Every structure is written in structure tokens, then in C-alpha cells.
Image (cartoon, rainbow, N blue to C red):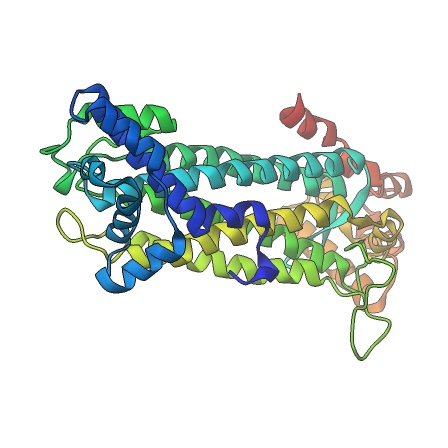
Length: 430
């Protein structure tokens, strides 16, 4: 991943140094389990623990010759350990090390992703509470609908990301597995208790049935969860982008003192952060298909999954972490203009009350079809001619035959649309 879209903490998880550290930790735990079982002599185990180390440059040099990364790694640590290295990697296969390490790296990544998700939930909660009763016009199909509140918009996003947090916790459980079962997963040359020992030390579960590799449906679940999180990040980003538009201006991304919006037009303040997140979401979503295709392997294993996991795996996780962090900055520093929200409500000329008028006419024993037709005709005239919907209703003979002036006036109360806001919030926060 290019530096522009990665953060240090999570990208270091996917650096060779961390990977080889985990490989070494797994190999040493296997040796420890075999030592406790009496397979490895005490002095040999002590020597292995003291001398086992690796050199990344040396591993790369050996791999160029042997064309196998795990063998290159084992050869390098064997050079440092000496004759006792014969006890290292006893009865296990490369996938035992690679897959268990991959699970551990995914779990390390989850800790960071969950931290960012919790922060986003807190930021959305604050915004939802701060603007709980600040009315703004709702839009369906991009067209004026009925009023809502900006707080309720943010509350909906809060609930969406709360569901994602639960999904990520489930995904973390799915990938937190260890497999030390040897070639084709039969434990023929390694006792199952070794796997249990390693899993406990790494705080992982043991795989139910491994076929030399951990089943890839686990990974597909994890990465499709990231794709869903990315899609919701885009959903929120699009809302901000639309509300940032010149015709709307209800919210704006924070614009720093010396920030520039356009190389050509000095007046521009563009929602570039939200736009950027839309693009990042596309990339993360695109990784779903390869990870689902990774589920289909030949017999007990093949290596077709490897290239996907070495490239798209770290990149998707790094991008998701970056996107969550950026969205946190956007939401935390979002500039909200409640005055403009009221102005946009006023731009409707009261048309957001059309359903209320129709329902009131229906109460007067008019058929729904007739009431709809009457109100629609007046509403479209108000919109086309930029006239007050209320005044046109007051002048309309057909409407006046059913509704008096007070009844019409009572229908144009903005507070009516917000009367159940507290009940919605109570469902979420109690």
C-alpha cells in the first residue's frame, strides 16, 4: 500500500519483520510443547530458545535459491541454532505456520479496527445528541420530502456502524483459529495436543477440521465484513458530500486556514476527504470476490489462495483502517449549519405538508384518490410558480369546502414532524 493511504500502527503488522516474528514464536511454541512431551531434550530446547533468530536479508537471499519462503526461514534460523535445529518444524508443514500466523495478524488488525470503529461510534453519538432536535428537510430520490432532524440522520449512521462493530467481533472470532495438524491435516506426525498448546498460548481456538490449511470461508467472512464497513463509510461520505453542495450547504468538511480547494478557482471548498473515501470503498469492496473464490481449493490444499492473501489481504485491512480514521476526522470536525437547514426547509414553500393535507381531506370522507389528485394539483402549481403552498390551499374552493382557515393553518406546524424523535432515541440509548 502506498504511504498516502496507510497508517503506521496497522501497516507494521504486515511488514516482514512482524510476520517472521510470529513464525518464530509459533515454531518455538511447537518446540516447547514437544519438549514437555519429552520429544526434545532439555538442553536442545534451551539452545533453540537462546539462539533462534532470523535475518530478513538472509531469508530473502536463501529464498531466491530454494523458491520457498518457509524453508528459507527455517534454513536461516537453523544456521543460528546449529545441530539442534533438527528439532524445529518437527511433524508440521508450512501451512501450519503460515495460516496460524495469518490468523494472528488478522486478530492484531482487528484490535486496531475495533478501536477506530468505537471512536467513530462515539463521534456519531455526540453529533446525533447535539443535533437531536435541529430540523432539516428530508430527501428521497434527492427531492424534498418531509422534515427530519440532522441528529436523527447521524443516529441512523450510529446504528449502522454499531451493527458493523458486532459483525467485526463475529469475524474476529471466525479467524482467530490455529492449525498445527501437519500434512493433509491428519496429525499423523504431530500430536493434537501440540496444536492445543500453541492455540492457548496465542489466545486462538483450534481449527475444527483442517485439511492442511484453515478453511478459507473464515477469511471470506472477515473480508466481506470489511467490505460492508467500507460501504457504510461511503454511505456516510455520500451524505456529507450531498449536504456540502453549493445548492445545499447544510454541512461542510472542516477547511483549515491555509487549505486550498482548487488550483484554478480560489473560492472552492471541495469535500475531497469524503470523495476520497468513496474511492477507497470501491477498492475494499473489490477484494470480496477473490476472497470468496479462495474458498474453492483443490482437495486438501493448493496455493491459489496465497497471492490474494499476500496482496489484497494487507491492502484491504490497511485501507479500511485509513478510511475509518479519516471518517473519524470528518465527523469530529464537521461544520454543521442549522440556519441553512431552516432556509432549505423554507425553500419548499411548505410542500413538505402535502401528505398531512391529503390525510386531513381523507378524514373528511374524501376518497384517497380524489384527495391525492386535489393536493397534487395545488402542490405542483406551488412548486412550478414558486408560490406558498399554504396560501394556494387557502384560495382553493374545493379545499375550502372541507377545511377552514384554522384547520389549514394547524397543518403547517413543523413540530408535528418531530413529535416522535424522543421515542426513537429512547429505543437506541434508553
